[in-house]
Length: 160
Image 1 (cartoon, helix red, strand yellow):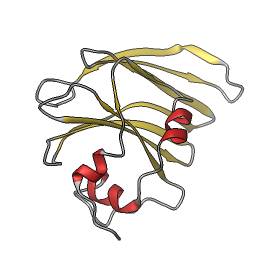
Image 2 (spheres, one colour; image 1 turned 90 degrees about the vertical axis):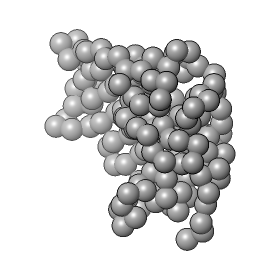
Image 3 (cartoon, rainbow, N blue to C red; image 1 turned 120 degrees about the vertical axis):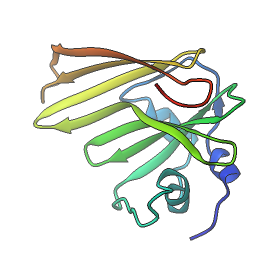
Image 4 (cartoon, rainbow, N blue to C red; image 1 turned 60 degrees about the vertical axis):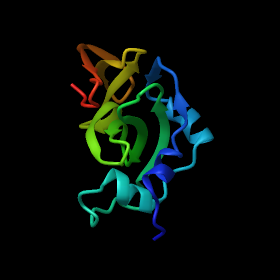
């Protein structure tokens, strides 16, 4: 496997100003503009603590964007696709490539015949607003499953 630097990794993520909304179909735009991450980058930067961790051949990682105007850390969002499970992951790193924090901030998951979704928006102040809900196999939304959450990226790069 080729050896990549952290600079090579972050170069895969175009810088974007906020706000950005991540939903069920947003990945189409990112997949059109950005190539999937090579396996070596996934091993070195997404699964750095477990070099033996191997996703199956159906798992794909697509770089989405780097959050603009983060001076003390690097904030990246990628899309991870597995069978019936799609996630947007926000990860923060030091400029040396050390992981500070990471969270799944939006997803679509199918389980028990229901589609579970979380949509999120990241604003200019690095606040993350998340809305969650479920629908049945006929895509009928169940309003009783609706919840909202707030997170934010702090000045030190932690996500709280």
